[in-house]
Length: 158
Image 1 (cartoon, helix red, strand yellow):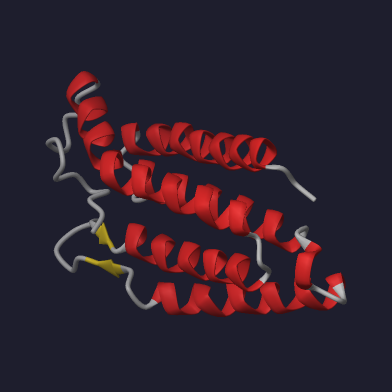
Image 2 (cartoon, helix red, strand yellow):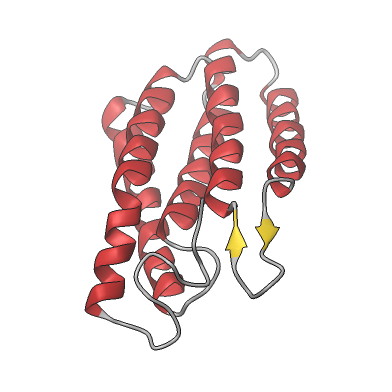
């Protein structure tokens, strides 16, 4: 079984790596930025850890297949909130879609009884959603692009 230190380390590193990748995407004016990438990385790490948390699973393979089905199905739900603005290349809803997907991952972790994973994921997503937009804006001010203004670029997320 994973201890708290290992859970915190794995989930935090996944979130930080997603943030770094998101900063790159944000600086290049791509549709997905800091929050979206950090949430997707956190969700992926959450579901992998939860699938390895056999506290209440009699059949680990069956539990893993159930999680796979949930996460795939929720991806289609998230796709329904992503919109491209008709007048330009703006894409809205990526962070919302990623949040829906992470919510499914956390729900699966709850079902697996993976409480350390649930707690740490919840804390990290609160940080990402609370501070991610400010981080994106700070980088946009530091590395301005000619084709958009801070907080209102082609990658604006809802």
